[in-house]
Image 1: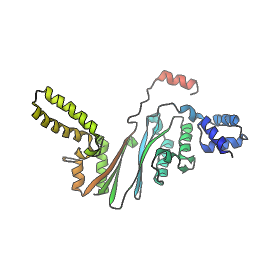
Image 2: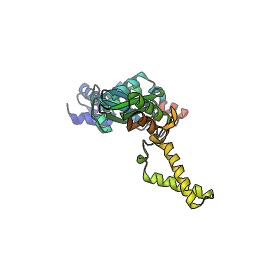
Image 3: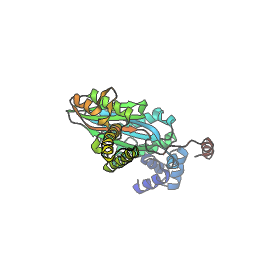
Image 4: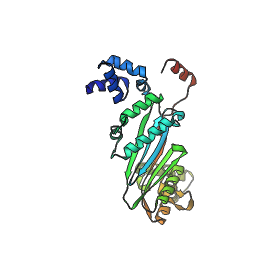
Length: 290
């Protein structure tokens, strides 16, 4: 089988590698007939979905031994996110990545699976389900024996959090994940906050203090106090722990003999353009076979 023909058919149809191979075999390597064959089978639908907005979907995480993966896959509607096929697909992708050493989306999508590659699987799911499916992001972590994972999935996968602690326990790590799910920290520690972001905040707080009529030396002290409040809002280790607001999250972990290595929080659709529902346009698109 000519690999360049398969690639050409994939580019035209958006179908998976194995489907393209079969289409060419069934049609004596005739590209046009193979394209029509894919359309007739409903497999070429994926290409027409490419420009659509996919900001719904699910996140999940899977642990096995000393490895864990957290990922997000998007679709167009919440209805599809609840579909059993989509949920199986999500877990298939997670387990395939977990058994690999992939570091980038490109490496992950090139991993082999029953559909050919994960990229083919995404394309085939788009054709099967009838919505654009987008593999958005993942983080693959590996721990040492003296470290602990803590995982938490909220609202059936709308938010997933994976915590890695040195020391402490799985239960403590899970408590940190639950806190992060609820309080949406932007950073783990103060050191992670970009210097220009802190400087910009200081300028705003200084102007506020001066406009309140405070002398310069007093304004400076007020700003330092308010900057600490700013850190408590956006940094995980500085936030008041939701289960015990007498301690910060950082202190809670330390009190339990641990240290935070990393926390990964995925909230489905965050930062993505959301789909604008327009019933008239949707009906028109369906009538036109889109």
